[in-house]
Length: 367
Image 1 (tube, rainbow, N blue to C red):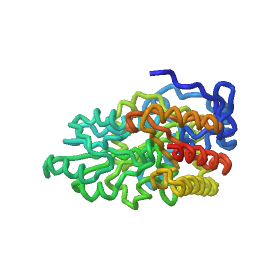
Image 2: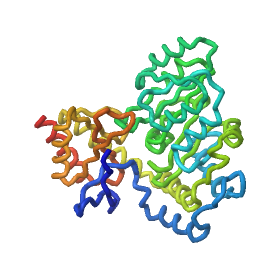
Image 3: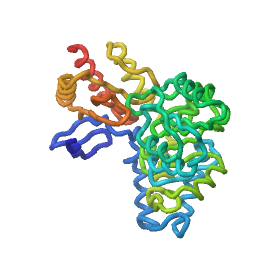
């Protein structure tokens, strides 16, 4: 494995690499809130007021009213009974699995789920069975094979980051036994999908009564940290059973303050989502018109997977010539040979978007 390139993000939608400036369609800071002036002011003010860290777990001497404020805001935003914040979205999945350990006879997991869900499944203390990607009938087949008395949990991403596809939550709820649960990693959907940005549940129009939703604050909200959104009884189990909650130092308070401001900015500035949706439609609609194969979802992710090394090198060269940094990645859940993942943002200009469209069209036209 070669070392990843050293990049310096600049001007919100550009990156410096080896002395040259490129348009940047990597990362998943969908609204560029990580560099929003109001968010940065909140961060700097909290550093001066609170310092960097509470230096203790929340169950000892590390609790603080800012954590409670953020949890209340998140629960309110996502219309959940409770929210429990963690140092990252990855940790949120693991902590929830610790709290649920021993409750289930079998865990069904989408074969392309994020690595954090695969790790979480291994902590559930039950057999883990993979089902075909986004294939409700395959999950149903496994459930039937386990028998009517089996207690099941299904683990899936909400919005899959490798191509922008979306989990069929309604179909899963229909085919699973009535007492089954879904652990939903909504890292890429939170703040992006749904009329209000509440994620995959809102997009699918389903109740959260049988769904445990985990989110990250490091994508749409541009900060850092994660949270579990669930009922009050499950929150109590997290507090009592999760070693990651009991023994882990929580989010630094300046990041909590920044997250609170990011939520304020997101909810107050309705133009952010409007611009992201407009940019997404512009790129995807135009690429489809030009015959470039693009998945038809509301996700701001465009994935291109050349079939071989020659195609990868050709597209990389074309992107660099267009002054676009080539976002080629090899990541669990994505194509085995790697792929180019373009993450659109609300802050990309029309000129940048048209430049990307031109580069991708030129590559596929030459074929």
